[in-house]
Image 1 (spheres, rainbow, N blue to C red):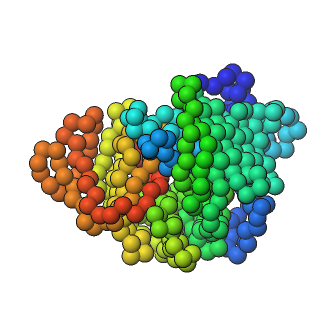
Image 2: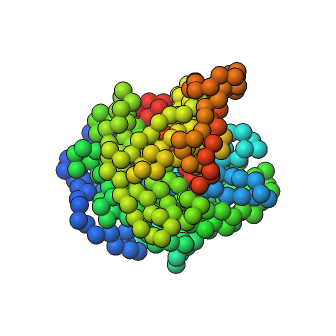
Image 3: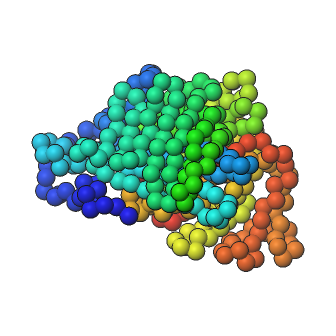
Length: 387
């Protein structure tokens, strides 16, 4: 999948451990009260441990829905930072891209990894400008442009803001655990208007739709007791937006939770940890990894109850060649919750079972009104997530 050139410049683990690393306290802390400033904070923050720009969207081509995901990650491994060698892995960049096309029945995805420099990869600090080879995401004026030349598909998409930036948490300071140090700087761009092309098998398709962008950076995100997280970002049909997440412990309990809702008038409500709840309605087991994911979920946040149904079950992304994990990242529809029955194809009701290969499948029938579309991210179901 990767060229020898990229492989040799990508993995920081290949650097000799005897090389002197930077001081253990070199990562800056994420602290409450730091005002986010734009356009500067659209750009990279190389002093922090980890960072990502995350785009997801529901697009349409000829009336048929297609989900799209583009994510660029930046990591400061803090290895050989005192070295003057151009080969010292001062910054590592990764990228994932995927399309969820019901016509194919499964996720089509690709990934990249590289060290910064050598003309292979970069993450600009002045504004959003990240690239690995011929994959790029850049903010030009008010609009984002993504160009991805992946194996099996190509993306050339433009994302135009239709609303103001949504600062998550306390004005961009987002708690991720009981310890305030377990926090990130985090903002979102909901309700992005998308236009452009998706190319499959040499045939470009004109697409349009709505997308969501997250930009987040931190030095220490998860508690040592955390297994992974559940996260959802929804563009609501009335023009509002909802984001909710929970950090899960090894026993499935919620270690921390949070999120926000911006209503159609622009008023923002932030959710306290006890105001967010995720409940599995239906699970799907991957025939490749064996991981079992709650692909249909009920999310209760701030008094709102929504049932999430996937565009298709198989939206598992194997990123072991880049970020080292396997996770589920899927396009979902949101319905008013609390009214749907979980029905078995064998005639029973109220059962929640694992499904594998479609036999004996239990489908969650959302009986409520459709209210939005977005993406659901499920990590730590294959193995403990290590950032």
